[in-house]
Length: 257
Image 1 (spheres, rainbow, N blue to C red):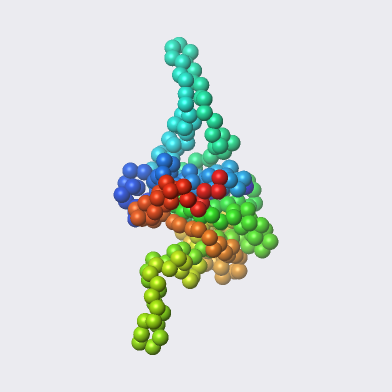
Image 2 (image 1 turned 60 degrees about the horizontal axis):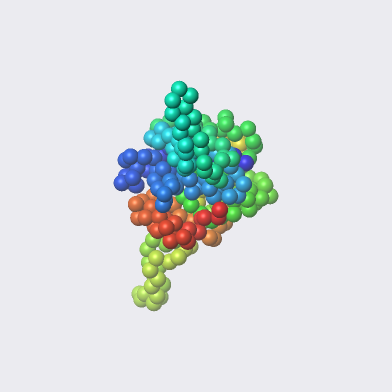
């Protein structure tokens, strides 16, 4: 099943890094977060990717054009008939990556609309280029097929950012700083999508999370696949450092490969 990844945003809240590269190329350990996202999909058997490029998209193109060169030991024969011999095999050799320029200022729905021509199948996967989780991708596909919505959202409960207060009358009787999960579910990305979502996407200015999702919800055509495990977005430098520490510790929850 094809995997569409939205890679074109400005990433303004991570300006320390995104001034020089697109947000999906910000590193978690030695590899960009985009590589981690693609690895978790590949581990579930989904290795055909469509990347929606925008801001600094050329950096992502260069990364994949030079992937074999940068990840291998090589022998180079110079002269009139130059040759390059690669000595290193890697797990990514059976990936296919389609790189689509979806515009500098295009919104999420517009990027998806531009990418649909590269997706002949009726059902595909979609996610953002800045979040990681340990959700069971194939279980979400089975859930989608069972309920038959246009869009299935992986719903998550992220870690709380602020302390919880338990109040009785005027008194605080319990306090828990930064609870492990907040009570409400949010959109965690990692969608399963039917191609007829195209009818809800108007033009480049369409924000997927606004009119299209509101219309689908009003029509009862969105389902939520609840995931209670690990999920973390990378909106800030602090979150990038948190994910890097997890990776370097050898205890990255999203590493399913």
